[in-house]
Length: 391
Image 1 (tube, helix red, strand yellow):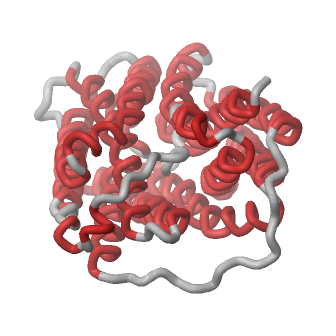
Image 2: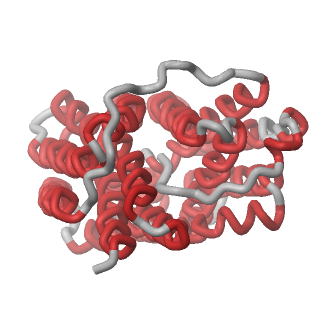
């Protein structure tokens, strides 16, 4: 098996499990978890925010760990952390232990991306790196898409589902330890901070707001659609499947940016995200449209993560990993703040008002994409390809 195929397959599985299952599946099963543990919307939002907080913590250390211990060790650690977190969710007897487990599971996503990027650079021929990275990047959407049918097949048995997900994560850890390369390691890590100029602050604000807006559906989409459709667990499973399927469109982000420009793609897909949030959650929109809204959301979210990756790298062309990390970290910080806020608004004001507010947050983020005029010409025109999945 060629290095590209081996690393692509392991990376695809790792991203699918860490992002699609360990991080985002909590929102899919939230109605059943809420019914069993009596969380309520506000507490559910706080716990969901813990998953994004776990990502924030982990991504700050993952690149350093990869440089110090190598891609194989950190990727294996990511799979094991995902498995431990999801096993904890399956066994959690109360909201406190559930919250801790959700945070641990969410941390696996922050650990996963840097080692896979390092493995591709170290072991895959340059002409095959883009294809390998594209394969890995597709893991998020596929992981989200398959979690829906799994939930439907298990008839809402969320503990059994997370137990099965944990077993998959541990098996993937064994594969990572066996198949990934041990990349070169270094004992020192750069300590200088990038320059936080006006353009960088625009990126930080836009990614924060986009991350916050996205939690309306990542954390509460399943609950919203279950309230509007009378399909029981099938409604949540269907929503997750169409979100994942829509996300496959995000693989075209690089081509869209090359054709239409970063600013146009950014503005357009934030408008699509705003529309999708309103379509899924607002009672003013016909209920059958909710699933179409889920597909639009998946396409918008994955495309926007690609946009922010390119934006971050263009801002710091001499430190691309740092630009990527800043963009993805601020998305997760926004998600950490957005989930509790949406939960509180949902409990206090209902779905119409809460989805309208969060659709407005997405529109506000679109207004912060006027960054090209802030960049020198050399930073506007640099071309980059998207490596691995974002938050």
